[in-house]
Amino acid sequence: MKRFISVAAIQMEILTLQVNTNLQKAKSLLEDALKGHTLDLVVLPEDCITGPLPYNLEYACDITSKTIVFFQKLAREHQVYIVCGSFIRKKKEGYFNTSLLINREGDIVLEYEKNNLWTPERRYLTAGTSVSAVKTSIGTIGIVICWDLAFPEVFQELALQGVDIVCCPSYWTREDSGFLLKKYPDANAEATMVDALCPARALENECLVIYANGANKAEIFLRTTKITETQIGHTQICAPLYGTVSKLANNKEGVIYYNYDRHLGRDAENRYHLRKDKQKSLVDTNS
Image (cartoon, rainbow, N blue to C red; front, side, top):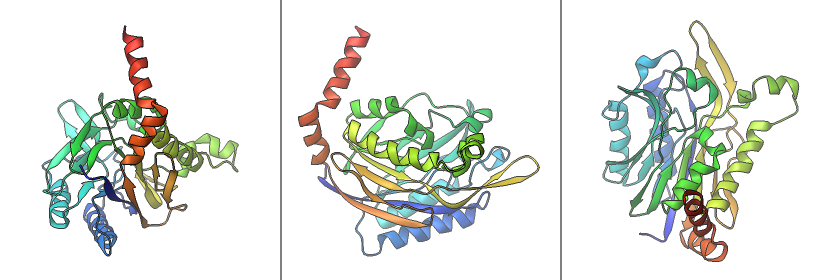
């Protein structure tokens, strides 16, 4: 595996139900990111193909859909690993918020179904039940999605699988606070939460965390109307020992980069033994 890994996270505006526009925007931002950079891995935001689909499940995709083939072709053409944000996938068991890792050959090497659904998603989506990491030529990679960030046990499980990098596509808005936003109007709970959890997950699990969120407005189509919210942005990359190493501290479209030394995670473990102690704790709990 490579020691030094060049990664990028894309923060893009997502137009709900405008699939072709979103795909072309993702392509344009990815190709701009590659100008002057030799990248190993690029991460896109959650729901970047269609936006959320609470009442438009006819837009759900499958891994053989042309939208997924689109990202496979991009990965192959540009010889880069891509986490294609996430999409709503239809299966016989239900609809799942799904993310994929695509390798340089355009092959899907990891599938992840969001384990911890955000409250409105629970009405129409089915939660995934497992997390896994995959060994690649650039390191061992895992995926989580958005609200998973609030659950340390998901990251701990990936850490115990030897993960080097955790990719976190997200669609996180200021209005996710709901009634709290009116009760405490000066609070900035969502951005504060993301800014706290991303470096915490990187530090406590000795892995690189790549968090890619949406930009500008967030459109959510309901049964007879549409609501518009504000993406918090705050796309960021966080590393062991360092915490946040690259960040967009706004909600505008853009790209961030980082050249990660995988020895950071190894050296952190050699000093702090966090993974070893987590494994020991798990064994003690099960014995």
